[in-house]
Image (cartoon, rainbow, N blue to C red):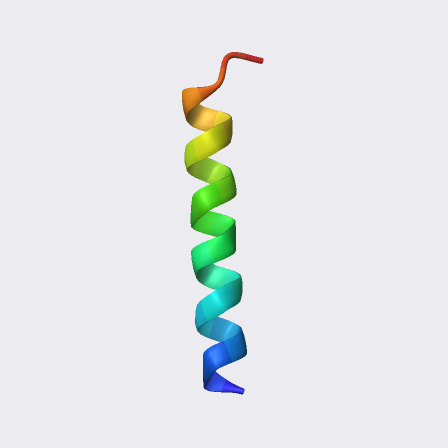
Length: 24
């Protein structure tokens, strides 16, 4: 389950970065 949590965190961070980089 550790891998899943790490993946979720990475995915969330990636989404956050994309949202922050891309103009809304």
